[in-house]
Image (cartoon, rainbow over all chains, first blue to last red; front, top):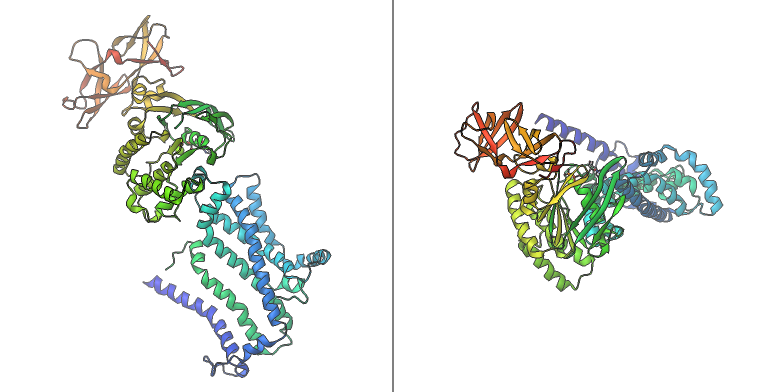
Amino acid sequence: MRTRLLYATLAVIASIWVLVPIYLLAVSAFGGPETINAWPKSLLPERVSTETLAFFFGVRGVWNAILNSILVAALTMVMSILLGAPAGYALARFVFPGKDGYRLLVLLTRAFPIAILALPLTVRFIEIGIYDTPLAVALVHTALALPFAILVSSSLFMGVPKELEEAAWTLGCTRFQAFRKVVWPLARPGIAATMIFAFVVSWNEVFAASVLTLRERTLTAFLLTSLNESPLHFRFAGGLFLIVPALIFIFAVRRYLFSMWGIANR
Amino acid sequence: MARILVRDIKKTFGKFVALKSVSMEVADGEFTVLLGPSGCGKTTLLRIIAGLETADRGEVWIGERRIDRLPPRARNIAMVFQNYAVFPHMTVFDNIAFGLRMQKRGSEEEIRRTVEWAAELVHIESQLEKYTGQLSGGQRQRVAVARALAVRPQVLLMDEPLSNLDALLRLEMRAELKTILRECATTTIYVTHDQVEAMSLADRIAIMHGGEIEQYDTPLEIYRNPATLFCGGFIGSPPMNFLEAERVAPGRYRVGGLELEGPRDAGPKLLLGIRPEDLEPVADGGAALAGSVLVVEPLGSHLLATLRLDGRLLRFAGDADLPLHPGETLRLRPRADRLRWFDPESERAVRS
Ligand SMILES: Nc1ncnc2c1ncn2[C@@H]1O[C@H](COP(=O)(O)OP(=O)(O)OP(=O)(O)O)[C@@H](O)[C@H]1O
Ligand SMILES: [Mg+2]
């Protein structure tokens, strides 16, 4: 009973820690321009207005940035799963020399700060002519999301008993058919969660996106560059719009995240 | 329906030799059991026949087809795995139909009929719409068997299919499997390390030990005439007794206080193998093996006694009504027609 009370308290504190800033952000974004500078802050907006949001979406370049962000995130999601799932499958099913080293190397890619890679990448992208395109940003974001995609999908595939696949082979499947009919359906929920994660990684990433684009900004890069010269309520609206998709996604896949972490969901 | 021919199969995992040189031939429609202790290579041999593992050398034939280079799907086999390996994301029906659909065996209507036939065979026709996660272990077991039978394989391979069931269900499934498989007359190799299961199911048993087949024979023949010390010790519960024998004259050996007729052209030292039930109590007088009774186990149908004889243990199985008590001396004589002789060096049987 005591411990339950403790858990409940901690959970409430953690929730407040996360939710209050989001709530204040929402209040500011929907409250109309004048609420932002009002003091003391009211916890309930005096009126609900879409003025701020309308203003936000009215700014030139916002829509283009949103579309770019979606495009980049979608590309990242697809590429990291197309590359990550087969690598994860290989890690889960095959024994090959240097397997442990490979596993480590995969993680090591995260050891290089993007800041160091940015300049050579920029030069190279200019050379091959994909600088300032969503593809260039998506490539870098894929590199960021890939280690996670590989390791998580490998553990997902490991969770599918090998005998199931072997049974499918003996019943007339090729390797690929067995994967499609047996392994894939069983790993799919987890794969979906991995894809969403890649999407969110890309959606939130700002540094590479700022360095690698000039006109074709993603939303984060766009907001970063226009933050200084824009009114406060614009920033609040932008902030809200940045976190909302991530929240929706995480809410949608919470079941899979829980099951990935071994927590029973109710 | 086809015979299986395995010729000179060798398999190593790194430095470890799992199969030394295994050869066997299973006749068309025959039920062969691979029996041996844990780690002797039973599963490995089965997986090589199924194509899930590649042998270092050797050949596998099914019927007149050499199959050891073919992928599992082209071998015309079906396998039942130790942990069932039924697909959890499919209904029982889809599980049983899986092989038929993958191999495009006829229309959906024909497939439905085959699935129903297989389901009836294993008595799960009422569960067809359920997902396999909702089934008990025994039911999953049945699904796995039905799924294997549905494709009408030339060869059926089963790897300890009953080992995950509780004792009672196991007994029940064992009897059922026997009837089902007789009905289908499919050439079958069945792996187990349970000797009772092996004895009750098999047409022939292959006793495996340390990556080799030590004896391949009918259950009774293995029981009566074990080819090696290992076979005699592995089959039978309690196992065969082995007593040291010393030659006193050509063809005559002394065992304990007894002189027995043995093989003529054998070495000066042999081991006498005798089953516990082939020992007979003798009335006082006459020569006999005299041992002091250590433990008496009345089992109802018969009685088991453990005796100490010259510092070694001897097991005796006799009539349930024998008045035996620990501490007493029991005098026994082996049945003359059941004496089996072994060379202690080669550990192989010596025929007399
Ligand atoms: N993939 C593998 N890698 C390395 N060693 C293996 C592999 N598969 C089997 N072995 C070894 O080969 C030996 C034979 O294994 P196998 O699974 O055939 O035994 P088994 O007779 O089926 O035993 P059990 O009754 O326990 O199932 C074992 O010692 C095992 O450790
Ligand atoms: Mg095994």
